[in-house]
Image (cartoon, rainbow, N blue to C red; front, side, top):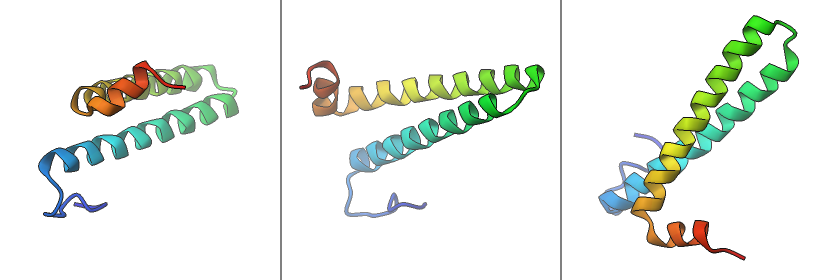
Length: 83
């Protein structure tokens, strides 16, 4: 794999959280790309498709956040209580 996921010095839990966090970054990037395309096109049919796709990426991001919060108690606490 890439991004160090194959590093044997990391625990499986750390590797899994790293993959989830990287995937979350990629989902947010995809959301931004879809939003940019939505705003650039004048084609309403395409805009509808891209909006649907963007919203699917938002669902994926939510699923990853849920996973991270479940697996990382400190991150979970920070989402609930922060400055």
